[in-house]
Image (spheres, rainbow, N blue to C red):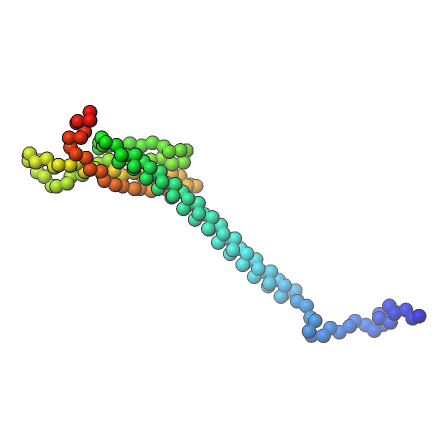
Amino acid sequence: MKDRSFVLCLAGPRKRSLGTRGFTLIETVIALAILGIGLTVIIELFSGGLRLARTSEEYTKAMNFARTKLEEIISQQNIEEGTDEGEFDDTFRWQVNTKKMDLLPVEKDSDFKPPVELFQVKVDILWKSGSKDKSATIQSYKVNKPGENEKKS
């Protein structure tokens, strides 16, 4: 038997046909660069979505706290002008501003008393998100009969 390895070495390198040609180094580098840029864009979009979801969650919590506080104030029989503040938890705090509104532009020396009193109730929710201070506001109006405050006392 003949030694075939010797015969192959003497034949020299085989010529490749054009159909079986592989990728060149520059084609591989360009493909990896395009892949890297695409992955970077996708990761940035994903992190932006997470940031927006956290912001949305904060505003939703703030508005729920504001509605709760507003309902608490509005449900009181006796409402007075003034400001008040407090905390819901370590993150969110509230400020309530109650102001009596004039229903009609009445002269000061007139004996006319309106049948109801109108109060504006404004609730501000404040919190810190990262390094920024954020806030949300909700307001409503409450009508009281003028005699209710004195009768209940």
